[in-house]
Image (cartoon, rainbow, N blue to C red; front, side, top):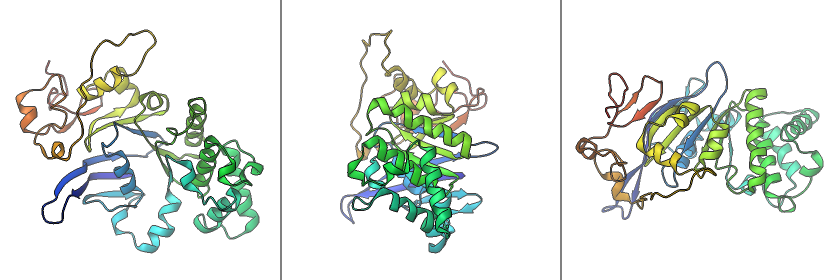
Length: 324
């Protein structure tokens, strides 16, 4: 997948006097290649993570930019291709697992319908085999799937929603906060399933979260998003070991640790529409290293000597080294 200069502008207020703000602002990245990977997009609520995911899923149209999947421009797909081809390539896993199922139907019949209608399997025996294999991948028995969603726990329903997502054998799963509504004791089990599916079924993941702990555990690549843009993007280990952008540093410093007592204060500003309209760096009002140029001109996303891309005036555009 190739995402290039993806932008989504929303308008608030009235038709004539409303204000525009960029929920997603000039986002670019590649995913895929020789091996599958888990690409995590992390950031605070309202930073544009879900809007980005919904554009990739084809649920909302971008204002500008392009999304190419397996060499095909999503914007140029016909309505038939959007409803038949795209779901075979990309599948979602939602934050609320109960949104994936009709509460009035037994889960197994819903999964079987996915196998026949989405995956296009005409033979019923083959469809049943595909469903049972998907249930095995998420470590559930067909007997569990014979129940209605309200008879199951949140963790079980989320595993079933993952089973539903892998039935068409997609190339990409977009998981938007998939463990935030699940008990902490069950979250690692869900994340381990993602890692297993990546390795065994060669599925790529876009994992969206505000939880840095799970991001560190699961990610191959990571992008830190702030007010619609990527502040920093690169290999997860490199970013967690040596974060470059001041916002990334703030996020990682805020992770609770048993061996550290937190004594500092974090300045958190309320996200207002006007903040998206200000010139310069979006993090300037919170950055401890703010300079005059930060308030006047938005920094480019440059590649540093370590291979991490960072959007910050603290780094030299030619060599990718810190100025301080």
